[in-house]
Length: 404
Image (tube, rainbow, N blue to C red; front, side, top):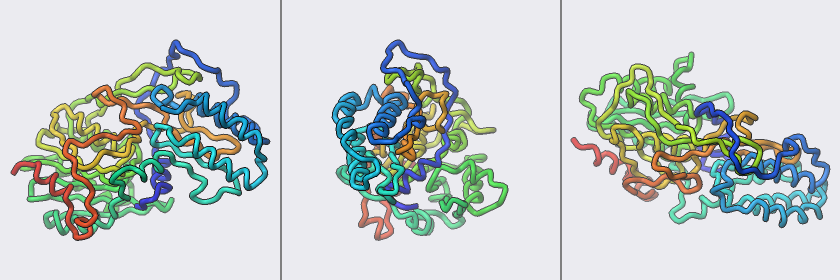
């Protein structure tokens, strides 16, 4: 697992999310109608390229009612600037990258990423990640915890003999790994680097990563003697929402609400559907786990890692403690470019991809944590010196919270 923003957003691009089916209901407030789909604009010049992008955002972006960006002011300021530039001039194309970076800098959607389709802007520069830039400037910022720490240091240091771990390489070049075992013979521990659990667990080809997940779920079939669980999603970049019922659903015997979601119900900027209940559903033959659960997450836990943390905190038993750092703040679910939702990601002639959330999520406490991050119950900051020495203060705090 890399620590660059590009890797993180590539991970997010693979996320295939489907929370629920929403009946599209148009709200009473209307904005400008959508005249043309953004991908259908002919971007022969920068005025047209800007118009396609601005209208795509105006109609598809889900967070306008909480976003600090004044999108009409963006139009007034940047439309004349784009009109002065030549779309076939390399200097102007690179200048447009700067403009797009400026106009998106305060967008609250922490999944948001922009990719320019031009031979004049190459490599990582083609991706604009407003939250990634802001994230790197926050106090106490650190990169991802080295995956080798989870895979090679934690098991012999903290887990009892008999722990299991495994790696699975995918054809797209990505890698999934998981570690599971016991601590003090009565605390079940699980860490994995991305949310591809359902895919790995159901793989027709046996592998050690699958064996690791099977070990964890097998332990939940007979919890006698288990005094707690530690779920470790630190530095986890997210993935498939389908994993939520598999992972958290294994800890409950009844469906429960974690909050609500809504989508765009029409083409106006503020045309929203009503809030619809978002729920975790119990896995087959699942039993309610009532002993203490500690979830470990950090400032690089994002998307499904955050939603899993929230879902664990919302368990009916109220037995979860969140230890670590405030999470990234990107928890708006994503689906493919589906016209059913009247929003979400899109593309234009000039944009290979405008990657943005399809749904807005509101947690059960009534708050929207997009762009803010979900706060821990017990804050334990990242400690590089300790990790370099093979010591994990966050994990040690988690262990201390499970009574023996």
